[in-house]
Amino acid sequence: MRVKRLYCNKDLYGHTYIRKGMSILKPTKLTFINGKPTLVSYDKIVRKDNDKAYNFHRNVEENDYVKFYHSTEWKHKRQEILERDYGLCQRCGMDAELVDHIIPSKDDWIDRLNNDNLQSLCRGCHKIKTKREWMKHHKGLERYMNINIVCGLPASGKTTYVKQHMTEHDLIYDYDELMQALTGLPLHQTNYDVHDYVSLFFDQMLRKLKAEQTFNNVWIIKTLPDKRIDTLLSNYHRINHIVIMTDPNVCEERLRERKERISFQKILNGFKTADFTGYRVVKNG
Ligand SMILES: [Zn+2]
Image (cartoon, rainbow, N blue to C red; front, side):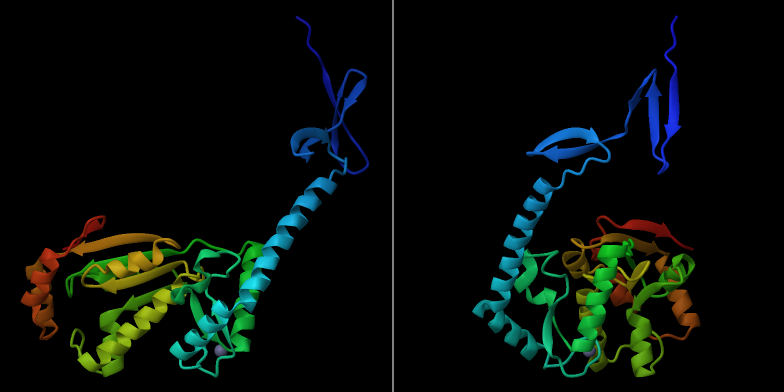
């Protein structure tokens, strides 16, 4: 049996050549010449075609952007959003100076006139946002953010579950805890006037989360499933659905021990009839 021997040589720049007998095989690369995939020597410069195609597409696209931002349609929309946001920057609350696409129009052309994708911003906040987007695009800072919805009866152990699974850079929305913080009332007691504020924060949070990759995890702690979360975020993030199943008697006992007076039976009835399709069941206690 004859064995062909291969030799390797390195050139000045450290590129490896494979020497087969006397002839030298240079490394190759795949490129497009007149639209056809072709193997060429790695150091051959074939850029004209690609550059032309690239420039053509870029010009067309940028033309569309310029046209869009000058359109009456956009000018009306811009005014509408500024009025909706009371002329306030949605990040810092100062006077808004412009209307921003939460998901940049270059990434999501279809949603360029969608109210849910628009927000009023001041110039300072817009600059910070644009810079962060640039970093994500150019430095690959984008991380995978999980949205975890954790449902369960009061005192079923939802908060404990989250505390056991959270990381150091998470966002936790806990309706009951927020209510307690904003009212000073004991846990699970609701002041219906404050409810609007806690919900308002929730709506704003969902809107902002669409374009966000900031956190490792977002935890949304609620008694019952909320379809709105899926409707608003499923196109943008992976959503995990978790329901903590604890014996209702155990929950009721815990609530009694904590001297929490809530209409447990009413909540339990709602819980029993709720649709937990697609939820992962975590048994507890
Ligand atoms: Zn601002």
